[in-house]
Image (cartoon, rainbow, N blue to C red; front, side):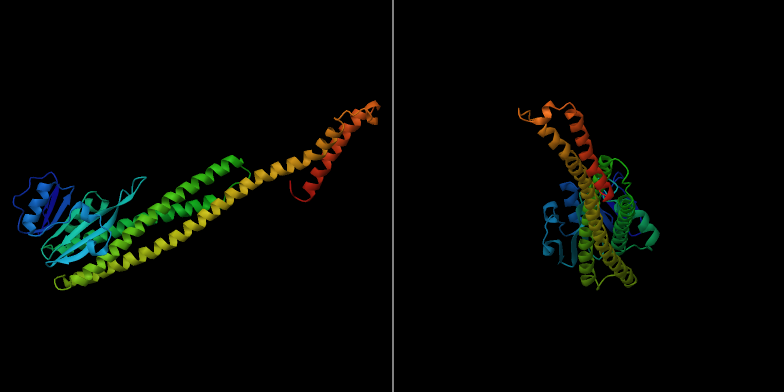
Length: 325
């Protein structure tokens, strides 16, 4: 599918009737899951080739960021599906020339849904390709910042839950809640890792753009681009902080789970100690040897019961005095 934006801010969306060939005043060409026919039509109008889906998956920086015939070829990992339980990253190629920005993508990140409104609101006509590129970068950074703020809110809530655990509750219920905390921390850790990967990719792409577009980039946009770079760096530092917070919370949660499990082991240990003396007495008088004098004693049975009670009560008193019960 193909979407177009002209210098005057006119949007030709997915389902609109396309002008063939593309209009001369085109500044933004967005290809979403393009067919081979759409790719060839775009390349014919642009007069240069577009990266294939296989080329977009390359991990070498030289394959993702390069300059060819005055056109910048840039591929970055962008977060997608942040509002879903399983967010991920997707490769998006930005082919930027002085006249037109072309994006090739096989997913629909949130930022692309609002790019037209932002272009009309922020960009003065005639709109330029680098202005559209700036709007996209700002939308990506804002989306990542919102996701990190949501993660921080989750971490604050989890911190309160972990360190305000009611120890009087059932041990199994406490362990079940703490296990849920560990699962949520794992999901948030994976999300932050994806966002950090995107920030690193966007940072490299922005630096490459600034180093190679000075000759034709609009002077009034230079400051805004550098502001975006600073925002990306600050968010990257923020992900480091959140990673440390999640590590601390994970270690604390696992420590609390170990404490709860140790309490169970402690109970069984104390119980085994309490029953050892009575068991010993019962074992002695259960041997039934012929020469045991107590076998003929009328008070033997009640005396054995009394001894077992005494030897069970003494350890209980001792453990309570030491604060072990």
